[in-house]
Image 1 (spheres, rainbow, N blue to C red):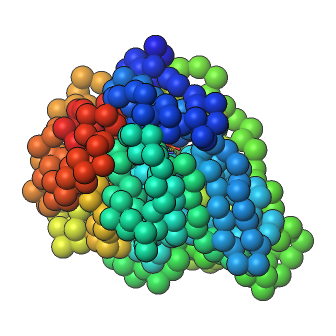
Image 2: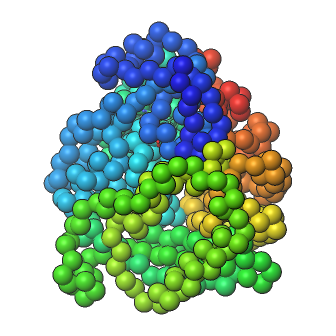
Length: 444
Ligand SMILES: Cc1cc2nc3c(=O)[nH]c(=O)nc-3n(C[C@H](O)[C@H](O)[C@H](O)COP(=O)(O)OP(=O)(O)OC[C@H]3O[C@@H](n4cnc5c(N)ncnc54)[C@H](O)[C@@H]3O)c2cc1C
């Protein structure tokens, strides 16, 4: 038995961790055990990638099976890391159609969470780009899923948090890029109204995201920096950085957090000093476009190894909700007011606009999503229960890949596709056989 956690290092559970010797051995393992779920690179924050009894470690499925630089179509085993795939495809002028905020995730994990990027409002979730995949079912059989073959099972597996089976491999199309640079423009928003308006106004940009100062209050509540960006063209590179490599290699992180920091390191004073610095530095760059390397643009935190240790040994909770556009101003305003009053040490929150979603357990819905971090503490739980109430009232939902503590009632209110998903699990014999700590906690 091994003690496992997600990226937030809360909660901790013991589970038998099994690493299949080969992709062929994985379905047989599935047939021989119950209470299991697949685990990719463990970047979900809570308990989604911890099996009720057994956790199947899928990172050994790490072969890139085919890559056609003429069409940008790629087939990979599900344990391939996004970071490794990017190192192969960027020099050929390709990028993934959707990426999350870290490159240390597996393709299987990206499909199971139907991850969204800074371009969801334009390009949908990663699952929208998957052409086909192979799924290992609880009885040890394998099944091909595409829009033509088993489309219902494909749809349930996208965003299905590993609960329909284990993804063995997947095929999808890459996006072609002229350079590995991003042309970014920064806008300053004085408060939440401004930020929502600015995100709506920049929705024709391929990528857009707002970093919100969670400690700002009163008239400045929700003050933000909005970053909009496009993949830079060769002409942009010529104009703004003529000496730069068109396809720069990935950046290796040079900093690391070597040990769990004591909990007093993060307090209202240190966080507000950091936020003040961050906002001044960002505001100076506002108004004119500049080029940013693809790696720090998409994956800013990956440059700091083990950054999850800054929250100390008890770990931290990431809270990500989405609320429909019509309710965004009032619900997110109430959430930020409570967080700011609480003074809990969320450095910066991230605000994004999402386009319509689909799928039974997939997170996105048309509206605005807010993400914040809180260290685990006795006060954090009642605060988050209160935020849940506001999200449910606004007919929103919480992201399962970030969740470690929501109640079954909050979950059921947010995911009307749940009964359909349960039926699909029953039909393939997954109920009771494929289960994670998350699925047990939420009664999925
Ligand atoms: C710094 C950071 C930034 C992030 N930013 C974003 C973001 O911008 N957008 C976003 O959407 N998410 C984001 N995430 C969340 C992350 O993208 C997802 O949790 C992703 O699923 C993690 O992939 P993983 O390989 O680590 O999977 P794990 O964490 O190991 O597993 C996640 C889920 O996928 C299932 N799974 C994993 N592999 C398989 C498989 N082969 N077959 C079936 N199921 C499988 C697991 O059972 C589990 O339910 C972020 C996470 C971090 C740490």
